[in-house]
Length: 335
Image (cartoon, rainbow, N blue to C red; front, side, top):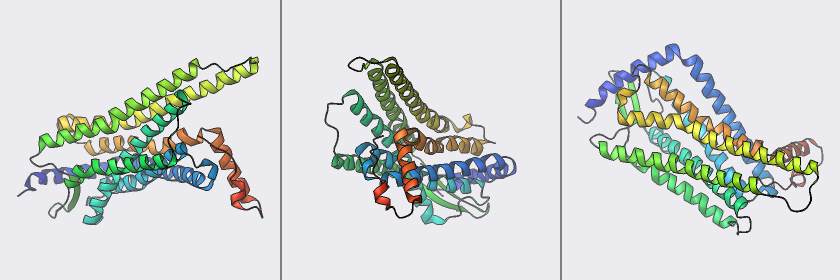
C-alpha cells in the first residue's frame, strides 16, 4: 500500500510531539503568540492608515499595503495552525478540507510577501536612481500586484498536488504533509527551484537595488550654497536612510535564512538534522521566518516620520468631537 512507508513517520511524529509538549512549550508558545499579535496588529494598522488617507494612495504605498495584507494573512494562517499541528498529540485536527486549504494559503502568502518586498526595492531604485524616468501608473501597479498573486499561486501547485491528509488509527494520529513518493528527483528540482525563485533571486534583487540607492545618495550633492546646519541635516538624513536600507536587507536575509537552510539539509539527507529534536528545530526556524511579518511594518512604515505624523493626525482627529473623519486625512505621505 502507498502509505505503508509512512507508518514509521507517524510513530516518530508521536514521539516528537510528546517531547515538544513536555519540555519546550513554555519557550515556543509565547514567542508564537507574540509574533501573531504584533504581526496582525501592526500590519492591520498599516493597511488602515493607507486606506483611510487618500493622500497615501500611490504606487509605493499600494505595494506596502499589499505586503502588509500578505504578512497579516501569513500570520493568521501560518502561526496558529502550525502551532496547533505541532503540539496536538493527534496531529492535524482540522479536517481534510482545511488541510488542503491551509497548505495552499500558507505558501502563497509567503511568496507574495517575498515578491512584494522585491517589487518595493525595485520601485524605490527607479524613484531614487532614475527620478526623471516615468513612474509606473496605478493601472500598471494593479497588474504587477495581480501578477505577484498569480505567480505565487502557480508556484504552490506542485506542492499542493503532493499534499495528503492521512489518518493512522493505531497511532491515533492524523498528518497533513507533502509527500513525493517515488518522485525524488522531481521533489529536489521543485525544492531547489523554489529556493532560487523565492530567496536567492529576490534577496539578490533587494541587495542590488538598495546598494545602488545607497551609492546614489552618497554621491548626491545638493545644488547651491548650504549652511553648516543644512549640511549636517543632509548627512543625518543620509545616515538614517543607510541604516534603514541595511535593516531591510538584513531582516529579509536573516529571517528567511534558517528555514531555507533547514529545508536544504532535510532535502539532502534528513539524518543531518537531530531526529529527537527535529520538530523543535523546524518550529524555531519557522518562527524566525514568521518574525519577518513583524519587522516589515516597522521597516516600511513605522520608521518613516510622515507615516507616524499621518497616524497621529488620524487618531487626533477621531478624538475630536464634531470633526468629520475625511477632513482629517489631508497630509501628503509618500513612503
